[in-house]
Structures are given as structure tokens and as C-alpha cells.
Amino acid sequence: MKNYLLNFDDKLLRTVREVGRQAAKKKYAAYIVGGIVRDIILKRKNYDLDIVVEGDAIRLARDLAKKWGVKVTVYKKFGTASLETSKGLRVDLATARRESYAHPGALPVVRPGSLKEDLLRRDLTVNAMAIAIGPEGFGRLTDEYGGLADLSKKAVRVLHKNSFIDDPTRILRAVRFEQRFSFKMERQTLLLMKAALRKGAPSNVKPPRYFTEFKKILCEEDPLNCLKRLHQLDGLCFLDPKLEVRIGDVCLLHKRIQKARKKSLYAQKDWWPVYFMGLLAKADDRVVKRVLERFPLTKNERRGIEQSRQSIDMVRSLSARSLRASQVFRILRPLTAEAVLYLRVVTSKVMVSQRIDRFLDRDIEVKLRINGDDLKAVGVASDRRMGRVLENILHLKIDKKVGTKQEELKAVLLSLKEF
Image 1 (cartoon, rainbow, N blue to C red):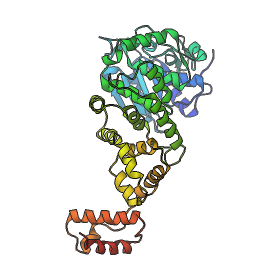
Image 2: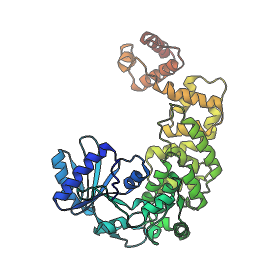
Image 3: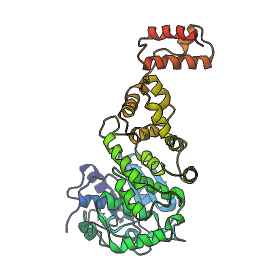
């Protein structure tokens, strides 16, 4: 018997052995399941520790939490629990379940079941394997549905013909995994996906749930191939039936994002909203309004998307020849961080790019040494007037016309004559 945990990450190994031992004491069988099994076989790092128990997972989680001296979060309705080890490792435990769907796209009704039934619930065969973590059979692979063979063939395959109908979000997951691993959709799976899309299966899922899965695509290290694949399959229509995505423009945006990310200033930025802005860039205002109303975006994300719609005018303003740093600051400061990023990659003008770089790298961090108390000391009583004076001095500092606190105070006295 091959032990698939021989080269397992040491940080995780101690934890899974302990969970396996505690489960065995209760005569439960415990298994690592899901994406982490796939990644163990592919020799990729993955710290999402999902464990299925043929037994009472909540009871086991509570015992482990007591033993480790940590808190446990219980989801009784689903027979699951989560806890975090003292070393910051999150462990999710679930009672083995089987599921059924009241109607296409509905959330599944789950009941206790066997490991085999639990694996059948999964989206793809490559994500439907398990590794035993109990003392007996530790490291043994359970592969009921051919996941190991599909991994070796680099094939993406669903477990049954109703998979995309039961849960249309699997369309997005199948595309995401196909492109992330450079796999290929198995022929029958591709036919089933195309049929589900023709029938409008995504419309059977509540928009927030479908968008949450779509956002995972936009958060991929390289989402472009996923977007191209979905566009090829007409899988972006869920955003709005009237939305015409110009994939060539998205490709150009992606190329510029990748170039920007090579700079340390942009390496750790959150780029998914920028890709989303790119998808909506040429859409009609009414389409964008429907998208913003339909999907679960924060107020700030909506504002950023609306601001990105003005990118042509803002780039034109930022292109003026004699533009002081403080004037660039006035243009960019009202924008959300994501809208600024969008401007940075949507422009082909080097001067505009440089001005945005300076804003993000230096000017946005400029702080005054003086404050409201200093203004009161020289006779500025009105809060509104204080704000105008401080803003004026900040602009002077951004333009490097003042530096020390004394210079700022001197500038205040001069500013008072203007207001």
C-alpha cells in the first residue's frame, strides 16, 4: 500500500495524525478530502485542511478543541465544525454526508452518509479523493471515481451527468481548475457544460452565490485564460444578457496588469476589481447599472466601478503638460484604490503612468506636522476653515514648497490672508 502522506508538510502532518488518533479512539474513520488530496499528489502546497469523518464530526471537533485549548465554531445544521490550532492552522471537520437537490441550482439538502457518498458530492473527480489519517491505514488513498487516473491524464471530469444542472457553480470551478493546472476538459464533461449553459443553468442559482464563485476566477494569479475560456463557451452571459465582452480589450488590460505587477509598488495589490472593471468597460450604462444592482459588491467597489467609467476624461486631465504633483493629487485622491489601479493600467501614456506611480509611492503618504491645535493657536476657529487651510498646506507640502513644522506654520499665516 502506497502511503500518500510520506512527504506531507511537517506542519500539517502532526495535526492530521492527532486528528486521526482522536477519531480512532471514538471508532470513527477520518480522511483528508478535497483539493488538498489533489495537491498532495501534484506535489503542490495547500494548507486548506478539510477532514471528513464517518462519525460525529462536531463531537470530535469539540474534543480536539478542548485538548488543544482553542475555540471551536460549530455549524450544527450541516454537521460541520472549524477550529484553529495554536500555530494558526485552520482545521475544518465534517460528518460524511450525502446530498439531494430540491430543484436545479438549489442549495443541497444534506444527510449523514458514507465516505463514498460524500465523495460523490464533489465537483470533479480530481477533487473527489480521500486519504486516511487514522492509525490503521494511515496515508492510504481512496479513489472511488477515477480521480487519480484523471490527474495523470490531466483531465477535468464531473462525477455524474446532472452535475452542472444540480449545481451550476461547478461550471466556473471546472473552468478554473482546467486553466489553473493546464488540464483539458474531458469530452463528455464539455458537452454537459455546453448543454447546461444553453439551458441557462446559471440563472437557477442566486446571483450572489454565482458571483462569489466567479470572483474566485478573477482572484486567480492569472485569470485571463479562464475569462477567455468562459467567453468562448458563452459563459459570461450570466453577468447580463446584453453585456458584450470585448475579450481583446481584456487581453490588453491583462498584459498591462502583468507588466505593472512586476513593480514592487503593485506586486501585492488586489487586482480582481480591475479585471471586473475591464469586463464592463465598454458596456452600456444601463447594463452596468443592472450588474451593480444584481451582484454582491460593496459600496466602495460600486463606487470604484462607476469611477472607472470616467477613465478617458481622467487620463486626459492627467496628461496636461504643466501639472504639479498637488494637482495630480487632487485628481486621484477622490478615487478608490481600485479605480486608481485601473487608470494606471488602462493608460498607454508613460507620463500618466509615472504620475500615478508617484501619487501611490509618495504623495498619498505625505502627512502634515501641524494639526488642528496648531491652527487654533494662531486663531483659526472654524472647523470648515481649518480643513481648507490644512488642505492648502498639504498641497504645498506635496509640491515640496514646505517641509518643516515651522515652514508649515508660516504657510498657515499666509493662507489665512487668502481665506
